[in-house]
Length: 136
Ligand code: TYD
Image (tube, rainbow, N blue to C red; front, side, top):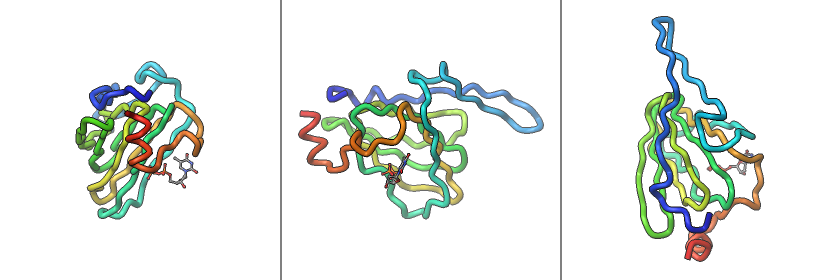
């Protein structure tokens, strides 16, 4: 998605089953616009840590702050946007062709990532200048 725009990266509500014993949220294939092939998570993240710093060519991802909070800085090569994730029932859809950097992790923050593909290093663009060439 060379032509994708930063505003295509949207917050999606995750259904929440409220219960005095503790709330429950569920992500199924119809919660997000892709089929789930992989789940991974970032945890034990130092507060000064900086994650991301890359874009993907084909991969869709859905990021959720399962615990705590962090900021996701998005750039489509022309426009930027910063989104704070801090609720277990709100996720950020990341579309291919979006440069992302993640920082300002709170203590105990956990970032769950639901992904459309298995891990494939050739899908990454890890150099920002290469990303700008790819987008323009
Ligand atoms: P990376 O996607 O660059 O992490 P982040 O965007 O959170 O900073 O991945 C970090 C390292 O982990 C990199 O060496 C690749 C490896 N990795 C896997 O082996 N499998 C995976 O599914 C993922 C997401 C990463």
